[in-house]
Length: 159
Image (cartoon, rainbow, N blue to C red):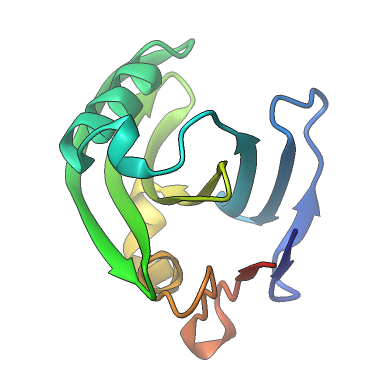
């Protein structure tokens, strides 16, 4: 179980087709989004899935395979352990026929469930959404994400 809280400037967005065990996405006018997906996995840790570099490559390969994607480039990747829970972070750019986007994702496996938190903004607006970076980079005890200035405040707790 988990809980996600968001600012009133972001509205819940429903996807027409369910592709994950659970998925919650919030959008703001102008193209900024923050959301989380949850899926059961057979592995108990991120290390079993690969190194941060290997996982970043898999994410990039999947992005490049999406319809309309013309280019994709990893900007950064890394790992951090907080309270015994390892997290991988991946930051990348993606260009498509629908525009250029800047993504930041943070992933963790807890109790054989893969949690993926992703923040995305249009490339030309990403720097103005500095709180997206803060939101994905600030972690405290089991998926608590807090953002400054009530920009993109998402709080996820895995219970």
